[in-house]
Image (cartoon, rainbow, N blue to C red):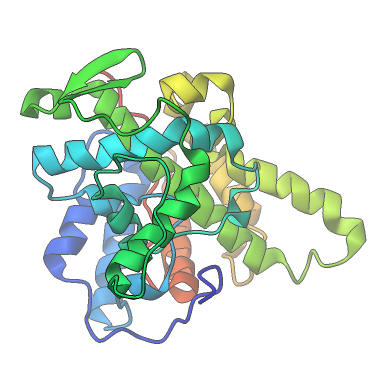
Length: 317
């Protein structure tokens, strides 16, 4: 199955309201200028019975944020333990064109994250091994290239991230370093989805070789939205995607608008730059609303599922 070009046949079940509320629950680290409209758009899509869940047929590039929702502290700690085991290797080896990666389905990520991963090498499966175990081994094998010596999942109740030692207690799970880690996973997904959609929707107009430079510039811009430009810096390996620049919502939204303005059927207002005042300018609020509605509907049409929501960098509390 080609997960970059997923089969968008409707699923039998709509996304439950509880799941939607969990995805859209307002928190301080969201882009508040877009959040309420984003929630309204998803609600309208659900009401029209046009929004379905097809996660099993649509791949993700990294563990998506929904995978970490409604977990016990111990299970969340276990998942992050496995993610940290491949994180350094991934950031060190991944291509800048993250849309070129072979993504994993959510179930593939679950198969990997729930494993104890006590050994680096994958044992060859026999014919008696179940299909489920075979799938898990295949996922592990694809991820092994990102496991460095001495960087296997820890068997202890403590993790190291961004210079901090973290334990599996509830208090530590709510700590800033782990909130940063969860934000990072969401941010990577948002960037990957945006760049994938941008590449797909602009491929026809950018097919001429003379436009290749413009297309590459657009990909760089899409990768920089919401602070993504630091994704491949040396600091990102040890400190995450931390960047004070991310707090400048206006710049991020303006780049978002500029990226989407080239997409087919984009509102005409996207051709006009966002006014400089986010809080008080009525035209800016209208543009933000149109951005959210257009992006959600476009993403659902091409991905068959809710896109990741852009979130603000979690400040220390």
